[in-house]
Length: 464
Image 1 (cartoon, rainbow, N blue to C red):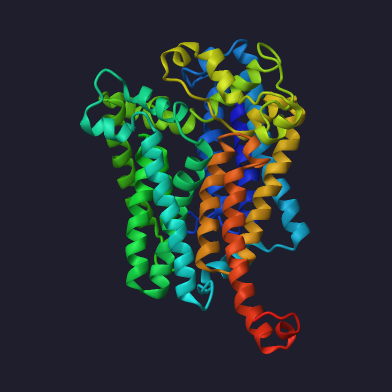
Image 2 (cartoon, one colour):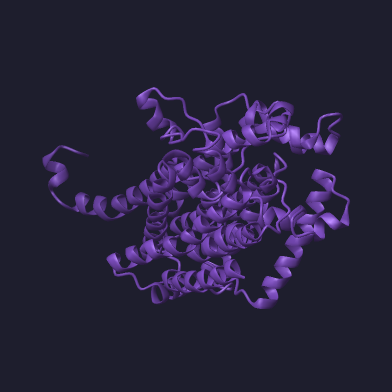
């Protein structure tokens, strides 16, 4: 009863804090912070932690804990700490920036869409070039993937399991991983969102055709390796775009309908991809889709706390971004991979094991112990809130709307994926620099160049 009482108190305090720093926790008005709260914390982390500390989870990962009574309590305490102190760090940033979450988020929803530049033709050709690059990257991904899982599924995969095909597609990719991840997996979905907004804004056939091409490409890159979650996240991104541009008004009934449709699709994917036929697996709280949602992301946190400092040495920064570890000639390792290799070595040997991604504080702990948990929580909270404030205050044009939606989905996924991506993420940096630089260049050209042409300055420096 003690742990249930603590859980309820933390839930109340955390919800109140997140409601304030987000401006709205309404499920029909989703935003970056509310998605972090509902998906990354409440569903993926906090709910499962209660079952685990009570010892009623019966989950296969937590059965690998040694001294389980001790580390079930420690893990629960760590999750409770994150639930409270993550929004507290966000509150600190809000006060520092004079941010009024409720009014500024509502104003953003009601604001009209602004064009990126007055010269539509010039921008379209820039965008078309980027789209061509992303299509080439998709073809490159297909070419350099030994066996494309979605193709193998359609034609029959023989003796090789789909789980093995998924791991091979990820770990045995023969091309440049960074090029694939940036220009195929990340850029294509983002460009499709932008093209959709431009097609709505301009109602031009060329934008509509380009959107259809990019949409097809985005769907492919989200399903080609048979991962179940990416396509759902992409469709949620698409829904968020429609909400932010005023094309969709969510209601409880619509949300329920989307939820039912998504559940049916998810069950179908489990049946087709993983061959699950047992009805009990779909209804059980610790197996199938439900177990995946409430235990799969948080159980590895308990394993991290249990293993590092006990069975495994602290990494002391070895899992920091390779650009940093390379400066000190240190091999980069990921704690999630080490935990998988230690707890489930047989999966590594048979090629079905990848990484045990989990709440970001686990990787912070694996590197720097409990100090990493404290500092990491405050750092991640401040980064999230700064991004949220920036996007709400930037001009509401198709590029910034799409980037806002992109981060609104990818940051919550990263929170239950690891810590080091918040320190240096080349994909995030490149996308921000690429599109932010494009907007800045077009704005400067539109505002400054005409003024220079009218002035005598160009003549004085002999520019024709």
